[in-house]
Image (cartoon, rainbow, N blue to C red):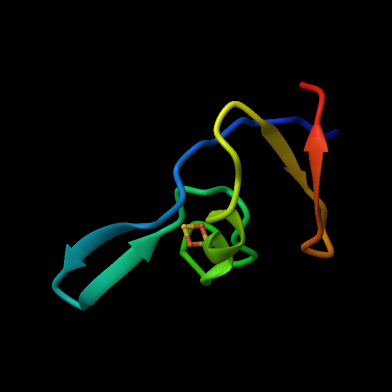
Length: 65
Ligand code: FES
């Protein structure tokens, strides 16, 4: 089963815990969910009004969704 989830944030959410800061992925393309792995850097040049699809290999393509 697969699903498409549209996410628009381009950076992580910082959570302060007793074990130190944790960075939670909000862009949706981390390979270490729920934590940020830095992959959000690939979203920085996304254009407003467009929707992109990120493939498992990290490549990106514009979507018609
Ligand atoms: S916020 Fe998603 S990888 Fe950093």
